[in-house]
Length: 84
Image 1 (cartoon, rainbow, N blue to C red):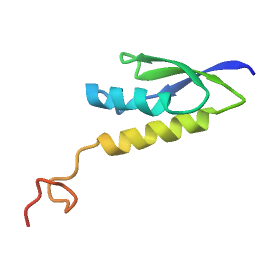
Image 2 (cartoon, helix red, strand yellow):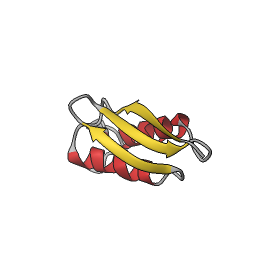
Image 3 (cartoon, rainbow, N blue to C red):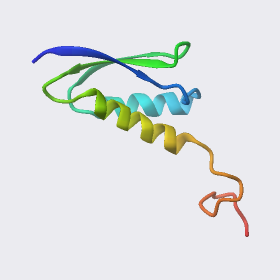
Image 4 (cartoon, rainbow, N blue to C red):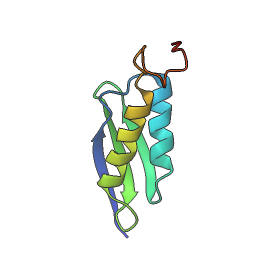
């Protein structure tokens, strides 16, 4: 077991809800031992056991958070505020 540190971008995630979602997503990955968010640099430092996970899992988790935190277009049928 070797503890590694990866720096990943959280560039498009800048609100409190999004940052909390990033923390939750990363904490739920087996092997993550610590997370440090740097909102000024738009990065996250992830400490992890390299025998249990990899940077690919972090970027995938963060990309899903980025996707779900973006607002719906106003005229999208999925938007709960959309009225046809």
